[in-house]
Image 1 (cartoon, one colour):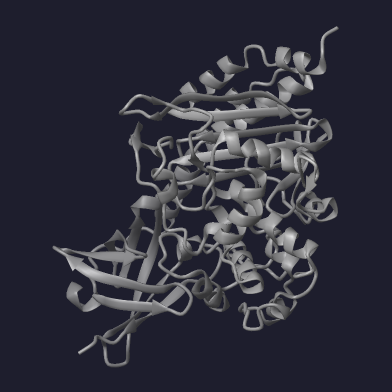
Image 2: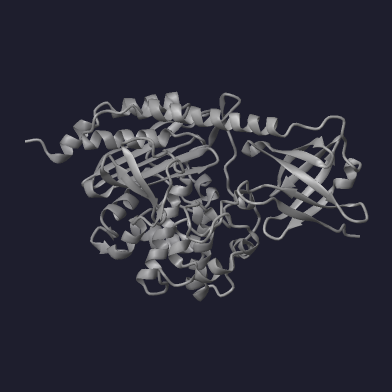
Length: 494
């Protein structure tokens, strides 16, 4: 008689070919894939290359940054403190951090520990604030008061990494341990995640780590690691491998147990897996347009919905040169994790959903064709929107700046975003923010186009003059959903 495990393994026949096809079509150098069902590891395997130049293979021990798939670790850490009575889900954050403040006074007073984790604080992403920033976690939290919201508190879903940084800072204030120390001591160590870490440098000190790659001008090229996680680690700073993530998957499928040890009470882990904030159709990737995937909400560190009518708990992750997907079908005791060393791709979802289809015995769906097309369509839409925006506000001909270029140079400060430096490089202006240089091209009058090449993002910068005629400020929309941020010129030091 065929065992359940043997049956599940048989359902995966040919799956490795599916993985290789997805990697080839998605131009992804390498991937690591693990599949667990009913407590048994059905597959734990590397595919492709972790280092293309040196022809090094991905292995189950290869370390990958997993980006936002790591938010679940922060949510579990908070749940552990609730379990111990050191936090309460529905107490205001101010009860623990009296100085905590948002621009919205009501939100400042009422936002709870639970709210930090489920993307309903009213703030949009404000992503440029943290990327590459030298802010400490404490400084980042202090700067939240100067960021404009784009919705009322708890009115709607808005994905927000900054609240996860705040949750990490809350852990430190309550326990005296940094988020990094707490996760290492309370999650990595007891689960036996011996290789996992919260710093890229720790991965580079090992002998088995994946290099990051991205598509540049239709070629896959190695890119630098993102390593400035000092403030944002709780939102996406976990590095792990298949051997370790196996224990993490089991921990969730076993309702907070590691072996026979209950590391986290099931009632509190369940809060991580419970829908808290409804996600409107089209605001998650993959979108809700496929009948197999429906009812997406955000829990705490996890997206929660249904997959072919089965409860699914999953979260993707993205950071420079890497993408990940961690998915659970808890009622079927299925866990899947996929790590890839190429940024900006849907391949981890393709592989994870294909694995789920096979284990559920579902009719084969061409997720590879579907999501590769969706990704291509998304890029085309973005390019079209950029072109339309350019056409909507064409440059006024025969105009020039009101001042010589050197007059615009200097330091400009925003109370939330910090400092931008404008300098002159030959006959053009240069913008430097968070140590990342970008070009400024004159459009008309005192308006320049800022081309954040690294982010493939363009926006306008408008300089303003004082009553005395000098350049005193600049306005720029670094967060498109709110009013332009005003950076005021800092007087030159003598």
